[in-house]
Image (cartoon, rainbow, N blue to C red; front, side, top):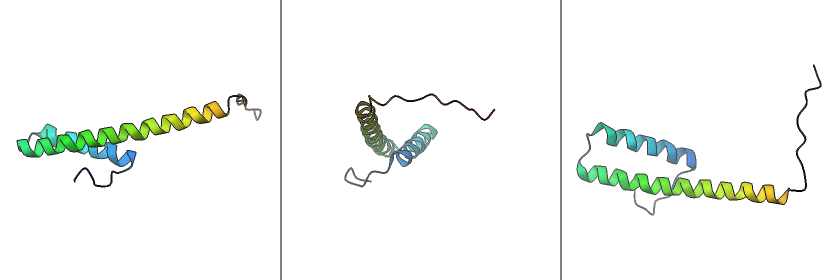
Length: 79
């Protein structure tokens, strides 16, 4: 896949990274194939990091926007 290919969602990226690692650990790939797999892995890792950073930013914004509302601890009164 080229760098311009559509990148998958987080779960698919992580799955593909695991698959790439397994393939490379087997040692059956040529040097060129290993480099191609390594490059794809780096691209996917950077993509996954960006997704996670975006999610973290959203969570931080939600917390900041709702600072005045305090969470009430759950109490199970059915007992």
